[in-house]
Length: 264
Image (cartoon, rainbow, N blue to C red; front, top):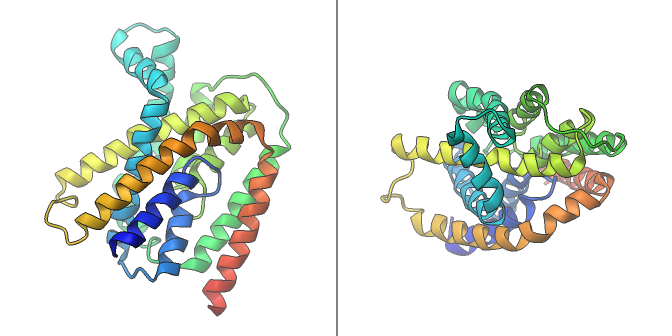
């Protein structure tokens, strides 16, 4: 992968991370269009690096919320902040288990199977469509709903299933307020991304002796900057816009991807 391609993919990641349209799916489609021939492990590693960049941009934008989570963890009091922190931890469990026991299987889905990504985008479209028809409420995230939202996040590790789309849709279908659902959705992924990066560093998968270091660095910077710009206004767009609009978009892109994968 050359540096220009990495920058393009970084921008795609930064712009799509905060919309319910599957940033990983768009990354895989972008790689296919740009002719990237990385094997599953390398492709997944680059995807994780870009997600790390947007996780950092999330921390910058949500710095007050992140501070509340950290404060809740170390207060040792069962108050609202510590309960929210505990719910974040509960939501992480399904994805952690999938990552630990099915990592090799997961890597196999990041090999440029465009038709598969298209089918997953159509599933995302269906989720968003039904979520948009759920009644608006003012409910908060409970421990039970946090675990179910976490299962959605684990399923969304597949490229083409939108993580934010799946988690926000699950939240709304469970009766959680859309605004609270969006906040919880964007915050719950940050510890997972940092955990994945730490695991890869300790496992020797992220080293300074990789031929793609320059491209990865360029993609990282592009994703971080695009994420900073996108996060400030796209979150408001998700909260206030009809999810059906994103469902239609995912359906169209999914059908195009299936057609490209079958006949392209």
